Image 1 (cartoon, each protein chain N blue to C red):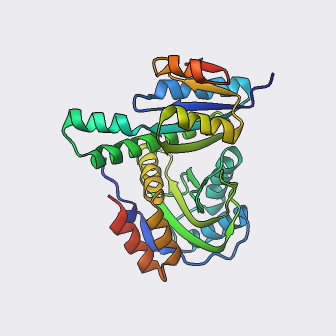
Image 2 (image 1 turned 135 degrees about the horizontal axis):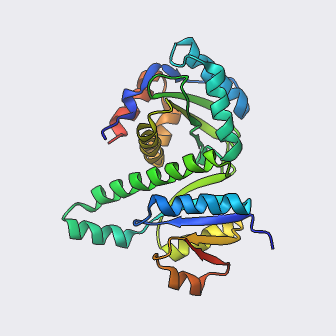
Length: 153
Length: 131
């Protein structure tokens, strides 16, 4: 299966600076942003699905990165969103560090393979130190998109 | 003795059956499941040589496959209400395992039965369970 992260990340789904200071507030803010741009039809249902996962795992994968994710019928297709927090948010990362870069993934219930592949590709991308640095320093959504496009394989 | 944290170690020959068994085991034990996929550089080189591919290509494929397995496991764990933590590391299998046992105070190891179980049995300081 061929899948590109950049095909599912829209410019309007990129928030350069999130206001929230803690995990649930950050998820709420990002989901509200997605609802505003009609990327998610039912924000409450999506938040419920995300919260279920957050209770059972740490989506903070370390090195300042969090990837909250869920399968939900609140979206019609695989959707990604990006947010940056200058001060960092506690996503209960295994390394104890706050998350400065947040990628959120939503996928319809029936698209499990695509969802798993998107998570795998994004995790691979974000393991690269150079990519993390570039994402932290990017000035606008276009630059974020450019970094993703240039570094995904 | 309470087994609060189990470490499931996955390598190149991992499959879905061992992950399902690990999730059910942790559910029954009411334990937390740490899932660790280890990329062994030696195995990558051998595979690249056998398949006449570049090491980097084999490495990238292996890494992506590792993450896919981890997220498949996570999906099943969430469905079953089992707490999980996903990890992917590169290096010597025994050394990586030792590091995780120490860093996360792991109580028991879960392995696919045919994996390098013998040498892990010998070297491990905690119980090892072959699934």
